[in-house]
Image 1 (cartoon, rainbow, N blue to C red):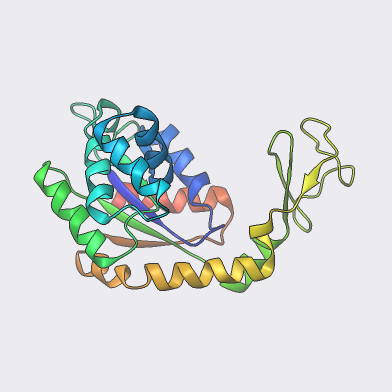
Image 2 (cartoon, rainbow, N blue to C red):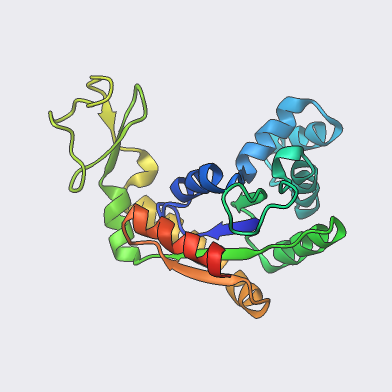
Length: 228
């Protein structure tokens, strides 16, 4: 089973991807992680990516598609023989951060077809932007262990002290400030809005309520995977 998770920053894509990895044997493919892994590998592709990144340019679409093609050829992205789609340990991948444009989506579909594969679902985690700004802007984390808290929804038992490791260094990330969140949401809208009609026309786009409780979002996604 091959999926794309769409949703703005803070919608919970990472959380849901990790759950899908555990429950369905899928592999999360975050493009940022793949770029760094390609550079670290020292391969021919990695050397090209390194040169592009060091110049401050964005990796062109052809490089991104080549990198994804190489990654999905790895055994951990293959479905086990006889696995039923949507079942536990069905195998496959979850793309996170790609595609962002219609040409990228078209190139991805063409590459998958060349490898005898296709996207099963593109799942959009819909959110209320005003509520999402409140959700993100109230977050703060432990500098030591990375545990997350929230000014309104999840305060530590002792103000300013991490409940996990006891560290007193709880901080707000700069990109979680309301004005920064609004900018990130605007960028997401501009990048993602054009590809929704593309995937809707192909019959693979499904929508879940990204503002629901985490477990409920998981249930909604599992229902999509189960029912098609």
